[in-house]
Image 1 (cartoon, rainbow, N blue to C red):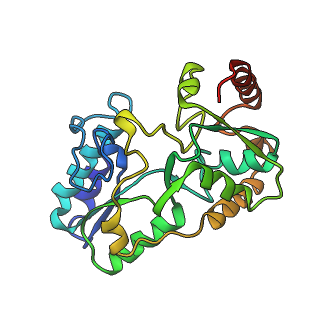
Image 2 (image 1 turned 90 degrees about the horizontal axis):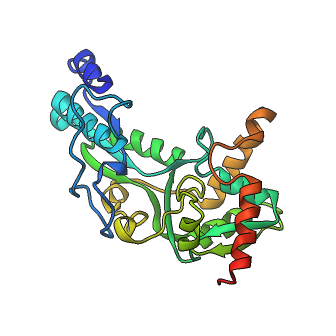
Image 3 (image 1 turned 60 degrees about the vertical axis):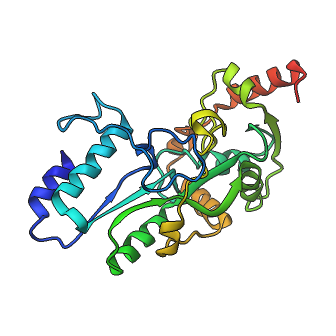
Length: 261
């Protein structure tokens, strides 16, 4: 309804409408390298709300409303996980904060599992650049430019700290057995199999060729930590995503007791 109302209010006065959608509009990410014409969810009903419809179908309906109002003047950006300074969800922040704390860190899956995200500053810069260059249409917007593994991400984050963190890799099946939720209890990461085989391997070449750029992981990690340390003590005390310290210790102990490697 917000997009529809914006269309009614602004259609005659705005030359372009930029809608920030999501990669969650795609039905699944079983395939590797999904492009902008990939199969999307059936749209939610026109009067649907967050209380009675799922996120992906709602965003598909929003895209439809944007096109209905602006036609070929609509610019639709589909980011994945948006990270960096200002993040209120902690869905990436958990890792810099946890690694900075040091000690044994539960690392999910295998070191080679791919991950993907986009720094909020890169996404907003591309939004402005796209408007300046009069771009329209749909664009997948997630990075980095080449495949990043979770090991590269974790060690890259550690490199901007003085932490003594050490990583213990816990298999995805054991994670599932302990009912730990990928992307929530263990942020950023999703086991690259089944419907999620292509989760972190979207085709973003269209946006990259149109000017989407990605800053270094070290920049994102440091800016995230700087932002976190600027927050009030009560905000820093409780992260909104990731494992509680007690749960992490309990899971690591169970993993060692299982004798698995």
